[in-house]
Length: 167
Image 1 (cartoon, one colour):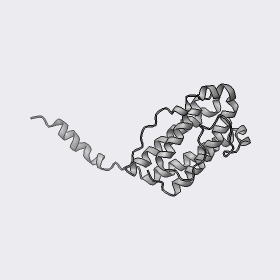
Image 2 (cartoon, one colour):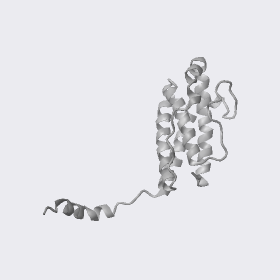
Image 3 (tube, one colour):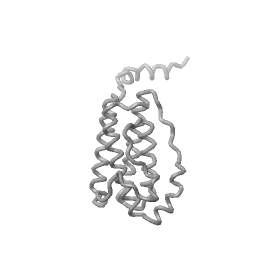
Image 4 (cartoon, one colour):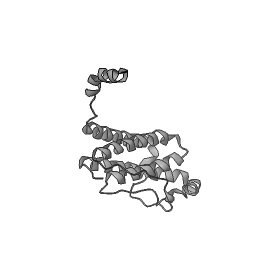
């Protein structure tokens, strides 16, 4: 009778029993820090200061605006839209912000899982099918409006995280 795997497991057991899960408060703090970092990156792009996040621009209605009450799933959906928009932009200014959004979405998934409400996978949105045409017509405006509205949305999310949003 071979007990090798059993002995290996028993030998590792003390080490495995000391492994602790990351406290959810740490994940929430990391989420807030990442949001602040993204907002700072947007502020560092000088041309984003020229447009208000509340301003309506014809043809750019697919870019999400501000939402006073956000659930974790709505936050994830909003970030997915922004991420799709930013990855479509040829500007080098938005590459790191797009990567940060991916990390932020991962943190939101962890927060949602801690509340036993896994977020559904966001698929490509139909409203973004016409993005290519809009980019050809107004590349600069799209970038400025997207970053400005993203900044406003992130600040809303930051406030919402303090209120412990629902699923």
